[in-house]
Length: 354
Image (cartoon, one colour):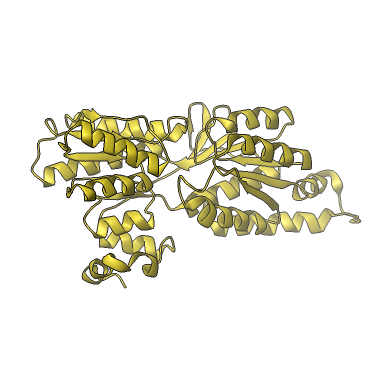
């Protein structure tokens, strides 16, 4: 549900507070609970700034706005890719009191925080990445993300008139400690497998772009440059892969995810076949509404489940051309000035992006 619904909830929540706030002579049988809930806050832990720029530039302000518009405060902190810091942040938040916790897992750290939160009766929303045992999970359909990525590789090979069954495809996955990485991998592997593609080389997955570049260079060397395509789980890693391909004067189908500036630029330059776009606003709006409902003592029903956890899933979008890039820009998730500069300017002009 969109921001309008959250704003509507804001009106109800604030009305409840004014009707039965401190000093009110109204009936406390129903409004006291609302007053208590309105005094609570949402505690949010973001994972890092490396795996995607979305956490700080997108999710933080979107979640803050969604909760504030409903009359609730939000304590939003970033663990900076440090599981110890993640645990410390959680302890500090819990000591101050949380009405709900919204956690983006980091290398399994979310599970430990979930246990502490549940021992205090605090509901937990697993945000973007799954956490087993959470009360709710809000994310995109991550298996579908992988399927779209896999199809990019299949279609890219066919466009170059290469037989997928004999093609040398390198698989570059995400960090296996991130539950979503498995969904991406399995979705992509299923689609590519049905086309006859098997990994010619598959290093251990990572969300560290520099490490991903090093891993791919080793794969490229091991295969003596005989690489026909590269399935890559996200744009940041894809950019590192493309840098190695550029260094060797090679251009092959490459997948990606996040509709990042680098990813969109590489699509325009013909170096990346496409990217899977996940408008974070949809995810943040749903998570904000869900947090508000929980703070107000409600127990919403999710449309589906993921590993036994009630799951609110959003639909990802495939971006492969200028029209898709224009949509990302129109949504406010990229700026022309950031995309169209340097050697990309000519490609923008040709594509009518201005």
